[in-house]
Length: 85
Image 1 (tube, helix red, strand yellow):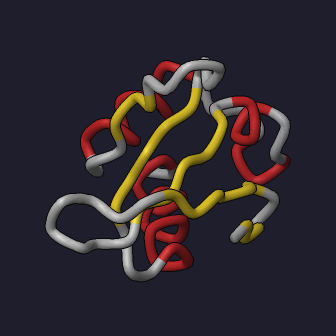
Image 2 (cartoon, one colour; image 1 turned 180 degrees about the vertical axis):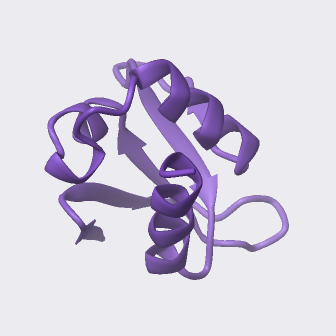
C-alpha cells in the first residue's frame, strides 16, 4: 500500500518482528520537495537517523530509508519542525 504525504511517497512493507507497521521512502523525495528547499541533505540525513529511520538494505533499493510508525503524518510534521530549528 502506497501513501503520499507532503510529496513524500511511503511504501508499506512487512511488519517488524514486534508487529509494528513499517514503511520505506526514498531519499530523493526530500531533495525534490519544496518544503525541504534550502535544507542540506546532510542535515536531513542526520535528523532522519536521530528520529529512528534506518537505511533500507534490500536488493534494488539504494538510498531508501525504513521506519516504524503508526502515524506518518506526525512523523513528517516532527521532521519538518526539527529541520527548521
